[in-house]
Length: 291
Image (tube, one colour):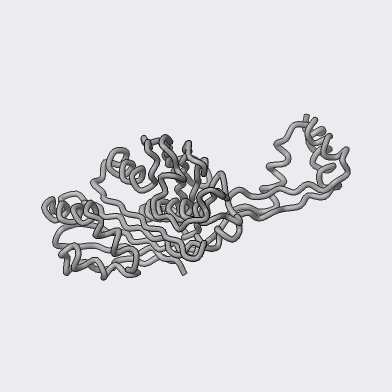
């Protein structure tokens, strides 16, 4: 089971969020038939979205990260809900020239230029939508800019992913936030551990927030909340039919003329839905009646 662990140091007023999304990254790697490079990009996106979901309030709230890049992966989108559901996809799933190597630096996959958008929404409306600069593209850096520049909350972020034998092996992330009236000296000390890669190295093996107590010199760092995270997609047959209904009358007529079933695949989870010819004909007739 994937998890989001929230910790707090009362003496310094610093907050920490640790997310492990390895299981979801593995599930999506299989559903998308993704290579190890795309799987790592998805893993980093899932970790970033999961970190942002720690601040969601309503049960129907969700937050998504969308990155478009000029590298061979093309881009990525990841989403996390307040209830713990996670989903993600990359624009390109397999990169034969890169996938033969167990890489830790995703720069060859992401390229030199890109943009990263963050959207926070409910089932009824968009609460926030904004972009941060992401050149060269890096999910961790883009996320840190979002915290510090858009939210104006001093935050350090680290995300670690790895592969083993051509498959995703680990996807985990940590964020440290300086709350109002937080201890600046203590936060600088924590920030230094992020900057010197000590946090990154510990994320390669650590599964619990307690593992970071000594590194940050925070003996009173305690877990205050633990949430379960899991793969979960909001797609269903009704939504797929609605999507097909949005096609033009001419497009629907062409589908009916073929006399063949149509398959629609969800970008987020890889689930494929089949709409039979009679179903397409019904959609067309209903659209003609409305028009």
